Length: 387
Image (cartoon, rainbow, N blue to C red; front, side, top):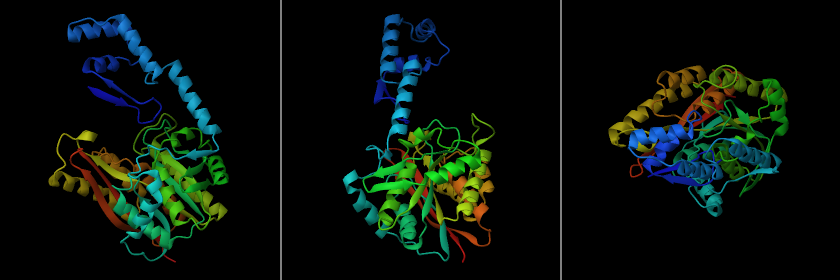
């Protein structure tokens, strides 16, 4: 049996299907009629499938929103409308925190207190932290946000996340405030509107992508805990893969670079003290992600070497070299957050002169679950400006 789940959360629940049903679903591609499916099924399995059975399967798929078509389009339109009409973007219960919601403040406090990295010299202007669940990303969260809580006094945080399962082919913001168990983080809507005008596009056109995406929200939790005594604003943005083509104008890398330059120009224009955060994980390895080998010591060492090769370009703050390194290797370890790391470095290198801007690798970490054949890596990196 196979279990099908929609990572975007548009379909309801999950479907459990047999290998025969899986073959039938593979033919539901917009090019085959049901009569074609019957013929292909008979050719492969040597027996017939009744038309009534296929029609019943289609009905089940439509009712559970697993099949594209008019019913699915209407369902998605209703979800988008509800998100746009809601007063805030609310925390999803199943975002994979790694702790129960009521335990969130305790966990955040314990993580920040567990920080081991010292405070680099200079003003903190940028940060890379994980978007893993709290337990697996604990050590990198600790060093990243332990540092931020001690060494940052920004009035605004541009929080760049990864668009894992959304529909936007380009960078997408949301104007919604983030309502979490720790309160409401206020979004700088004026900044987003000005930024949209500077970019010449509506950055919130696909803002529904933010509804279930957790990579920005994980950073917001820490900001709310660390700075609960003083007001701050956020600019929530999701980034696509900078090495991929887009459905729009040009390649994703060029569009992300233009966006990052626009962010830097807008920050300089309004003069508000701003820190840029990338909620970024690195490699995704193991059988769960398609590797046909165990997560043994030799393989994990190879993964670390690959991660550190691209992290060297982060440490030298060279966004183009970083993007090219991921693209050249065709991303064999499935680094998921090249887009927001690239965007963040573009912002910082546009704003600050290179000799004054420095990057500090605080920690590198591999979260490995050998039993589940899953390994995800992450890092904590601080960007400081010499004063």
